Image (tube, rainbow, N blue to C red; front, side, top):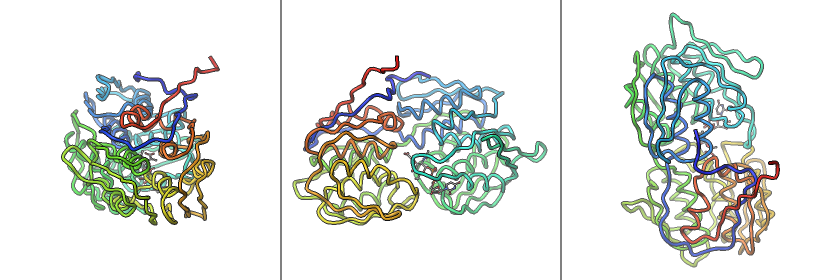
Length: 436
Ligand code: EPU
């Protein structure tokens, strides 16, 4: 599958102090929904059409994952994918693909349900540190799959005669992708599966809506108890991906930092209520309007707040780098507690290079607001932190250059162009690749 622009690893974002921001910017489809909807297409032979799919590199990687087992993925339009799943598909996902994107592990449930067998490279730790998949494997084991790990691969098999069977699964933690893996597996299992302490993220509900349109019988998606009555077969379908709440949060934070008034089109308040409450406490006004969210910030200084990240509907860990960046120029001290990923404060060293006063104590960050930051060359360590460093450049004196742009490209389409369309002084500079 081809994309419309290259994901040049030598690229940089060049950012200068900006604001106030004005105008409107449109949020694309949710990365963390689109990737799972693509995996769900493995469940049955047929032609699927997914619209509002963002043009980002993670979607390209998921296309490669599907193509590696024999599926065809065609971008029929910049934001539309047609996925053709043949009758026969393979069951193995190689190391190179899982290494590029750990979310590839969401094919485990669909492959086991469809083929009774799956061999997927075991994801290792990543930018956020230790990231096990035990909750995925425990849940699928309760449904009758047997797993072994050898040569870096996790191999699952299901007895040919029984297939996957419905089970009562209580998740030790409401893991987002484990819930999705089990949900997809359960659609074709024999009998009823109950997933308790399920993740409640809007992307889980979006996946359930797509599966339901394929003929699955699901109740309770979006709550912490999901009940799935297995069916014999599913069928092809069409679906429009929900808007990306993390991309929406990025633009809200941009205005929170650089001031101004911007309409964030398609952003959904009901998908980000707790964040909106925090933004209100920080003196960022957000109003729900028919087209999306209207965000305003005047001349007063941001107020500091304490924040703890939690599974949905709590403040998402993905918003944390934006909040830390805002707190670094707010009035007072804010304590940020990261409860999901042990290694997610790695970008803080980069923000410190821009003059931020942040101390890390275990999984807490103590952020003392300063009047402004100072531009510097910094490196994006992961998707959201990369976007946050670009936002930091909007309130930094002088010039900030953000390298490691391939991380940002994983989750953001046209990030520099969208920010500059609302008045931010941001440009993407694609350096020629020296190695060629
Ligand atoms: N966990 C386990 N065992 C498991 C699974 C998870 O211990 O088997 C732990 C993790 O180590 C972590 C916690 O549970 O401490 C939460 O992890 P979760 O499984 O919910 O995260 P995920 O499903 O791997 C998704 C998103 C992330 C987002 C998190 C939290 C996708 C592809 N990824 O990851 O998104 O941060 O949920 O909401 O949906 C991003 O978009 O940049 C991103 C990282």
